[in-house]
Amino acid sequence: MSHIKNLWKYRHYILTSIKSEFVTKFIRSKLGGLWIVLNPLAQVAIYALVLSAVLAAKLPGIDSKYAYAIYLMAGILGWNLFFEIITRMTNVFVENANLLKKMAFPKMTLPLIIIGSAIINNILLFFSILLVFGLLGHTISTAVIWIIPLTLITVFLGASMGLFLGIVNVFIRDTQQIVPIILQFWFWLTPIVYSWSIIPQKYLYLVMLNPLSGIIQGYQNILVYNKQPELSVLFYPLVLGTFIAMLSLYMYARANEEMADVL
Image 1 (cartoon, rainbow, N blue to C red):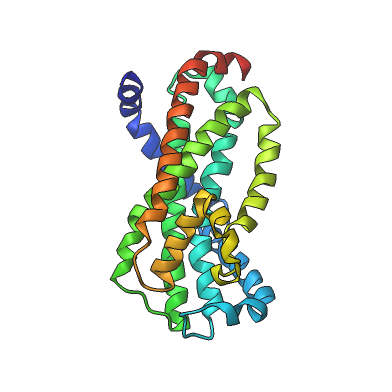
Image 2 (image 1 turned 135 degrees about the vertical axis):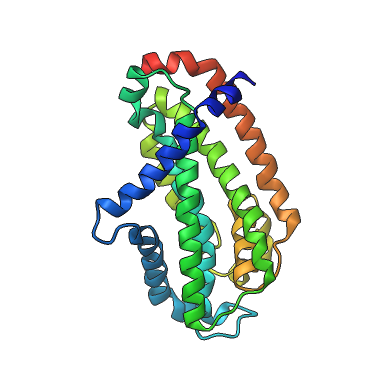
């Protein structure tokens, strides 16, 4: 409870830092915040160009010649949010080592700043995708409201894992090198660029062991098929995220003092 009270005292610092980070992206670049959406959309364009001829015909239930691009954008929206949170939080304490040594403030403010920035970036990407959907003639339904709880689940899972990895990275610096490699495999083990229909039935349970599979399927149901996500498959990432969050907070409480010395 004392940690929460401390964080509340620093709420203005957190909000100001999120705003400053966002504004800085516009000041230091000619295209400014457009890079927030251009990078993931370029990723979609590359995959669509390379794989659409192979996989577009295997997307059931979408009556559009741009079906594969629409399917890709739905998955990328969820993956990009998770990826940004987990990669930035892995390095958050090490990258801010000098700041943590010189100033006395709750270390947990730093992950919260990352989470806030990632959510803003994801909102911008979401509206950019809706704009592209409109240009491609793809409409969405009221099911889009489910994006809000799905985003919160994605943030919760990513932040839980990111905090855990951030603490581990303070003591084992190899972590920041290993995480990007694992995320590359993780991306391809999640049905983002390929359809669920090409996965053999006997291997589906293995795919669902991946906590992101149910989340990404939710994004695809909402944005591609205009229906709500299957709530049953979201229970697993929620439980896993809760377990990792509790473990991370326990580690943080035990290692909080020692972290400053190691940094």
